[in-house]
Image (cartoon, rainbow, N blue to C red):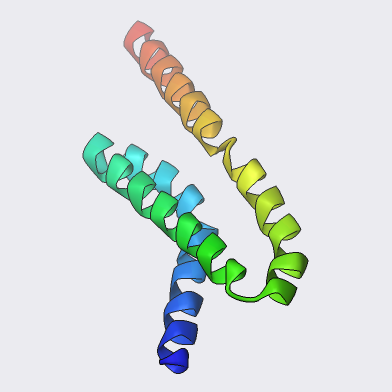
Length: 98
């Protein structure tokens, strides 16, 4: 049982690390439905990561500040999406002018 927990944790935590940045790509390339699905999966992965960290006080003490800082940085990912949409709109407007 413990081996399964470790394997699942490695997979989900690895996904949680890259998922916020993949969410932007999903919104841009596949549309809103895929983007919001990816957002939901990201939230679940991040919640599971906190649960996995909480299983061991030493790991929680060491990794929680790092993980919290990373989640704070990831909270700015939607701002990057908004900037990308603005840049795309400007590019489309410029292309239509010429």
